Image (cartoon, rainbow, N blue to C red; front, top):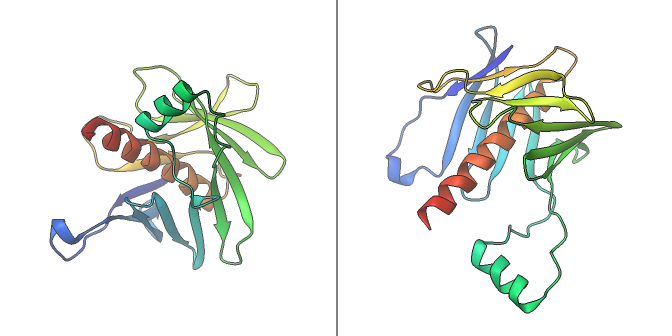
Length: 181
């Protein structure tokens, strides 16, 4: 099981625009995650390999008022802008598209649903496409903790597991942004 805990850092809270996490495998450090809150993208370093998790294009999501204006004007819905996990050479390893309940995730030929099993559940669960059998969970196990867990089978590579964590960070940042506007 992988865990992510906040990294110690220097600087003032007002000058920090990213979140930093140490990634651990059974309490042994294996890498880090730097998440840019403004652009909702992440840089991962795991076992000496680097990855990025970001939108496929630079286009941002529609804001609520933009959606309302588009619907009132009868405009077409913009094309999806999925999140992509890429290795250092730019090869796409996994893609995730936002759905009503969570994300539709593809990794190679495999398809998954990444969602909460119920409204009151803390972590998100990963399901094979078309199945209701959870493969594992990602997120907080308890309410008052800052440690994030990636409790998935070992056949899911570490980069994919951390990519799922980045998707949760994106959801959290979007919820915070919409609650303050």
